[in-house]
Length: 177
View 1 (cartoon, rainbow, N blue to C red):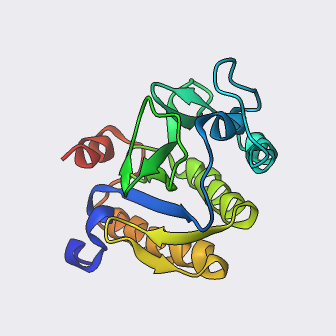
View 2: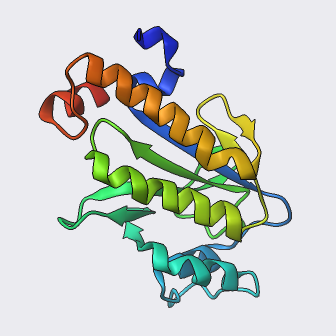
């Protein structure tokens, strides 16, 4: 398989799913509940209950965003609040979307299941439209996980044929190109 057969961002291992809120997005206080805790300076609204329900995914605040971290405390799955199609930081919301990012090359294969669980739970819990990748291709909620699994599988096959193992130093170098 040639790298040109992969969707653009997968060439460098990037996997990105955007969840656009259909009706009024969360405030920062609502979104912070995904960590399992209330923010002391940003109260949640009634919409916050859905995010509290997602707290079992293991997100915590990392830098100005949120992440699920591996056992060494390194972020593996990133969550970025978005306004007008772009990630924002130091913003109280409401947000129009959230973006979930994962890098296939910089993470061990064992982390893929965590990413898939995150996107599946978010798509099942929140009233959202789902968009794939940099091109923001619409994906039906019920097709999200099979579509992402298929695309990840194609990328992993490509890198395997090149003798590159996700999570290796060589793979991490490619992900930074």
